[in-house]
Length: 214
Ligand SMILES: O=C(O)c1ccccc1NCC(=O)[C@H](O)[C@H](O)COP(=O)(O)O
Image 1 (spheres, rainbow, N blue to C red):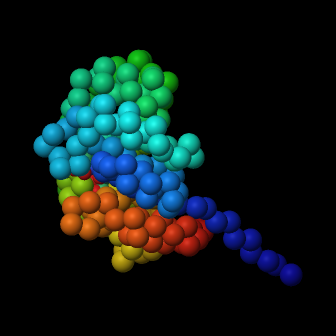
Image 2: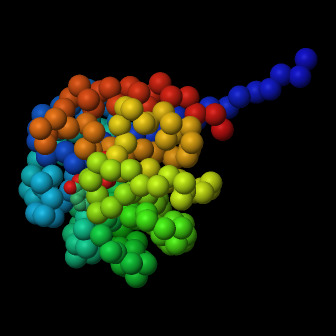
């Protein structure tokens, strides 16, 4: 009998924009693969200072990898937080260029994610050329809760994060259509501007229940 073997992969999930001890408790219960903190960027309502980040991180489950999200920060800031172990990954969400990435890579062995705002095919091509370990395709400046035009996404052969307006209502179609290595959520798991433990749990469980054929 000619039996077709199906291989499946598990899509990773990151919950971004944590600010409070109760948010840490919520992710410790839901167990996403990654969580994210917006670091020293006061323009964001999700901003945390370095001191707040260090305190929050102390209570984080060791199986959840913390990412610091930076917007055009002095390169020394992500380097220090990576090297002291406060964060496991730095997510660069501003206009950091290849020179910045090369400099940061020279200062740390830890992993880098470069976020790109996707409006055109050229934006995707630029992302694919990035020297970062992971690329993250997003709608706009970050944390907007809006999707971008998924028709712009080609088949991507490197590990990448899909972000922008993802939630329980579109996670399954996004994963089956685009096959991201990881999905990244913030706005859809909030209520009244704060992270909502039930919504976080539902989103993580939704992703865990989606079997991705490879
Ligand atoms: O969340 C912010 O306020 C923010 C500010 C500046 C840079 C990045 C920011 N957020 C990043 C993320 O939350 C995620 O990587 C992603 O954009 C998901 O956002 P959402 O569309 O809200 O799910």
